[in-house]
Image (tube, rainbow, N blue to C red; front, side, top):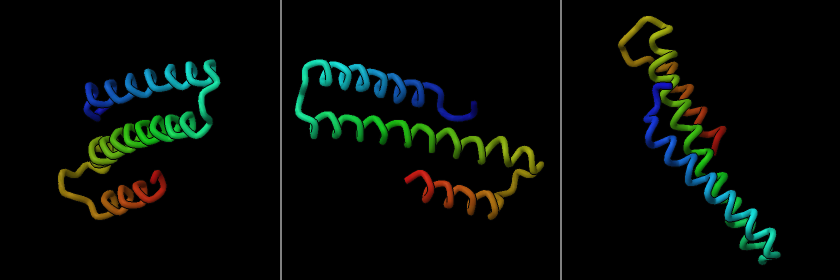
Length: 87
């Protein structure tokens, strides 16, 4: 993986902790809106981690696969599309 492993790992661990918290909230029969807000927070963390991983993949692996070190407008276009799809 070409993305910042420590950063991605930290984000995933935070999401895991939040998921454990959500399970406790469900067990405690907490307010539905509060649970939903926590779920949205986890989704955001996972989307951002996924975006970072995919960006790194396209910028390194795909670029290497194209055998060029020059910026490739098609890669940047794909990254822009990816941002729109994941958001």
